[in-house]
Amino acid sequence: MKPTIAADKWVAGIVGLLSGAMSAVTYYNVRELSRVDEPESRIVFYYGVFDSLGALVLAIPFGWHVPTSTTIWPLLGVAFMGTLGQIFMTRAFGQGKTLVSAVLSYSGIVFSSLFGIWIFGDDLPWSSWLAIAMIIAAGVIALRTTSRSRTAKR
Image (cartoon, rainbow, N blue to C red; front, side, top):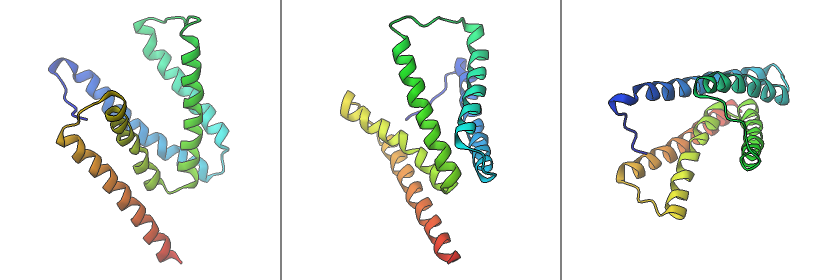
């Protein structure tokens, strides 16, 4: 959780920033599609189609590698779990509060850091702990803000 960009890695940095921007656009579109009663399964299906096409466009210049009998099972596991995750994220953004869903999606960073400490014995610097505290604080603020707005509407 100490991002730095070397001078020769600026393209990767821009790709990362564009990925974050595209995620925001995706979450917005999922929310809007859910508001017009588009079925979650259709949203997830087309998200997967366009995501796969985008990945294919990026894979072509670097070479396509056909999965082997050893690599196909982990690949299918990732695909299955990714699909489940996308279904749940679609439901969260479609039926839940967008602010809460977006902030809670960052809890993955916190859990990844804690698993790194627990499983791999990582030693986090103070800046990582500060970032974790900020993520948790943002979650608490988002939850309190949405509960206040729900109480005010009653």
